[in-house]
Image 1 (tube, one colour):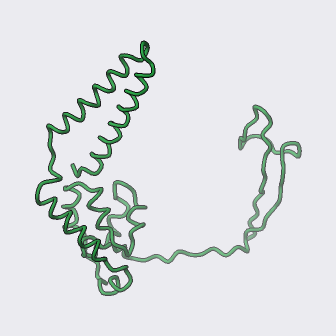
Image 2: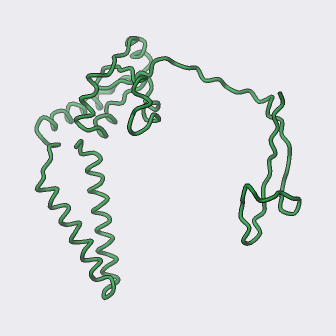
Image 3: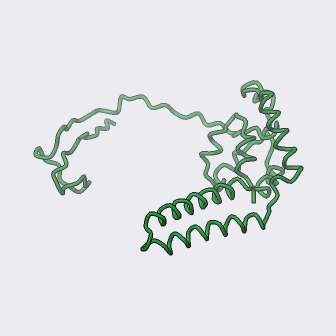
Length: 194
């Protein structure tokens, strides 16, 4: 079966914009050609049954979890046959980390270790530091500190809105600082493992 496609480029005449329903004519068509795509080879994807990811030196088969991952399957696919320890610890809550205990372990660990890049000494030292800081409570929530951050944000935002008509330049600076504070608050909650 031969498959052909019409390839065309349109000129944009004033208010006319590209619209799939807009009729194609010689007047508005810059280039038209018919291309036979039936002879173009298509690579078939090799389907691998397991989707193995290394986390804290343990290989897990995430093929059953892939389609239900809340952030999307592309993140799991990105780390296939690779180490994802830092990403897991950086973007998952303590509740999410507990789910690791329920995941199936990979069956071909020796083969995976040979294929994957080795973990460097610098990375191992970083992991030891992160573990020590977690044990010392550096990632525990401090509700008083969070209340201070929200109070600063509310004061900046409220002040910026209040002086918007009388002192527009001051308002611009205050609202800019409020948006920056909001960005950092959001950043802290993403990495906060709450």
